[in-house]
Image (cartoon, rainbow over all chains, first blue to last red; front, side, top):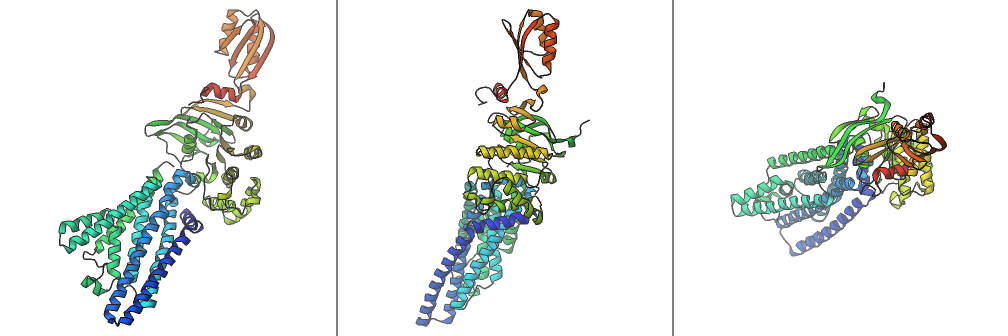
Length: 276
Length: 308
């Protein structure tokens, strides 16, 4: 019961503090910009009599580009909105009146986590749905395996959310933000090293990328999502900037799931055992 | 024979270290049910850490504690506890009624009971006219009042009030005193942590002085016979033997011409002292027992530096 009360409060907090609405407004702005660009591009393609196959491939790339921007927004939103919720409430003492209620601490933390999960699920679903709706209406295409891609992008956010929660039970809000963003940056860089390693066929560089993904699998989830959502031709011909030569395996996806669970368990255990 | 369930609070050798530094050295305390108990001490004496340990917010390094006959940290016991933290912070985007409903739901109270209880509490703390404002628009005193209402939501058997009058004007302070008395009258126990000694003196049955994380003295406030008293006596024919005999009641006896001043742990000792003096031939002209005020005793214990 305590879990759902805290989940509801966390969700309502995001809405009342206008975080959710501001994020959606910014997302709406992004969709308008994206749609406008796509609209003019489609018009020019038609005027130049471009071949339908090429037109379709470029539209597919535009979908992936839009989703890449959504992924970036979701990552930033996940970290920025959640860094203060645990460490901030501990530092300010807000948690004291809550943690002395007859609700086990694990329920308080899990409830907050679920509240953020709900908010992020809504945000990602709306934004991914928005990009696909825009491209379908204007260019007649949508992402290839949309459900798989959406799930992987969602999972990336939830991995980052869980890591943020775990750090927040040890460190201040600022340190938590720096650590989580730093880890994601490491994974991002590792992903590019892995790609260049694959292009130049340098197995050690590829291994560096894999190690970075083991340290933080968030970027690997996006690369797998991009692989799932792109057109088969783009994946085979490597003609898109989002084509990936070294596709993260399903084992990496399961590893990310395990990573998420461990981060959440660490957060719950630490929160249950620490002084408040 | 007393049982642990007879006590609202019972601690034995409670100790807390923060990074090797002692915050609470050795807290041994018995607070019977139905008592308003004051917790006094200078800044940094370990009062707030002690309260947090009793509430399960801070884990003790060693020692044992029971709340309402159950070990500290027992989740179900918290249904019967109310707590006003020293710096009450909360979700300031809520209205006072929403805050009380949230805390009530965390207590497991039904919606029907909350519908009945919330207006009563808002009325009690004088916030009914402000029920639709957001807490971010509240003054410090108003926040303290809603915090107090939150601590009384579940009609608790034990209430921890950490500096409940900080930020309150005289009317608010009077309200807190009245609420504490009302809680005592309905049989609840209250642990009051306050720097306002006059307030403690008026509301508490008993106080504990804490210094360096240890209880250095407990004092009964509602029984004049059990209160430390300074007795001033003007008498003639007081021999050194008579003065020596006073050691039975006091270790500090000062003599100055015909004036004897001694400190006794109980007002009940005064008639015995008078009998001792008369029986040994002293002529008594005046006996004045002076109850040591809480403030004087506090300063005696913590020193003029306030424990800094």
